Length: 133
Image 1 (cartoon, rainbow, N blue to C red):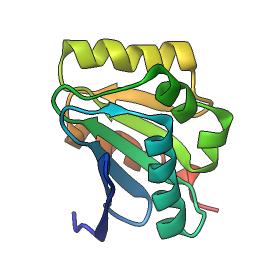
Image 2: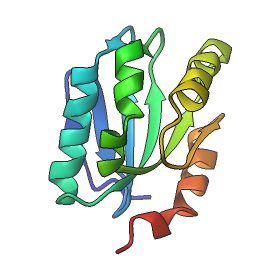
Image 3: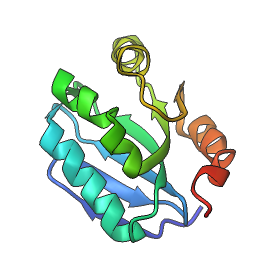
Image 4: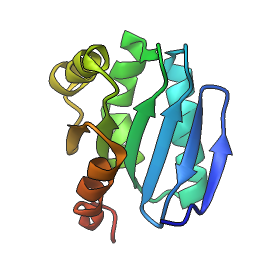
């Protein structure tokens, strides 16, 4: 898979993998804020000309999202940018945090957790119909 390009932000790298799929990786040892989530959404919106994306999310070692960032990332507003989320879980602790996001915040779009990037990408590719208009 050819990487189209990357946008480097303070909290994360946003990589545009193909015409529909975006990978955001939050850096190590970071507590992600709602403002940083918005900066990620802004980068996606700018690069995609307002079209929604299929988003794969991974996080570095000792990185988590604040409760406010999780709430914002799953708000109805976030679905203006994202059509589906694939969360790559790093370890059991991260899986528990991702479960809170999925079950408690309940984003209004398809969302799934995966043990690796390959399975996350395969799942996202099955959801291209959500972004094709």
